Length: 301
Image (cartoon, rainbow, N blue to C red):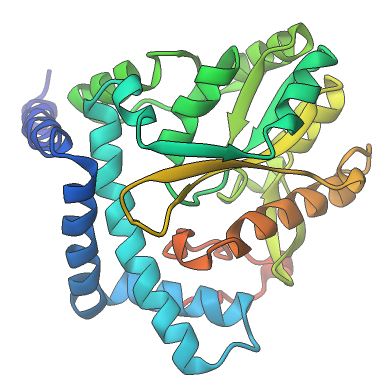
């Protein structure tokens, strides 16, 4: 092992130790700390602040500038809250984390799919606490999830151990996709993040809040090729700031078509509906529109 790799592993081990200690704190305490860090981030982290403002300008062009600024500030606080809560999700048992969920909305969507013997593809954007969402999906389904190892061996061990408590982890590559194609016709389920830019060859250009966005084909292909049901899913923070509820979001009929653009556009509308439940709980700090069609200039400075 090279000295550079050894240094990286040592740093990773130290980071995991700190993360584990932080993760042992009660979730409400972590939320409070994250809220304060998010407040500071607005003033000391111009990168995330500017990306958030740009995304909100693109997605909500009719929103008053002052309202957008207020929403951007709230989004940064929510993102830092979630980041610390994720540390808890990686450090505490799934049962402990699930105790913070108060109720579920529209769960009949899942019940009906399971009664029909269908596989389920959950559409799970970066909204609310998506790690906690994974625990709940695994409680209700025989769940598989694609996983890309972290660069740090120590961090990878922590994350993999946490996520595999009740979930079968498969590689985020062709082998993993084949495993999903085998599992879904057997009535199993998977959760897919639909709001990260894919490679050009695995994406399609369709609207997202009215802005052309490179969107993954995978959700549409998985569901339609295996005759599975697609359902939007999220874990939303309750007004008390200490607990959560989960919800199932229906996907409109246009999703179920062999036309990939029509299907992906319907998926994006489902994601939009999830976000509109409480826009500040979405991770607007991500450069969702980084790639542009036809070599158009970047939307981000």
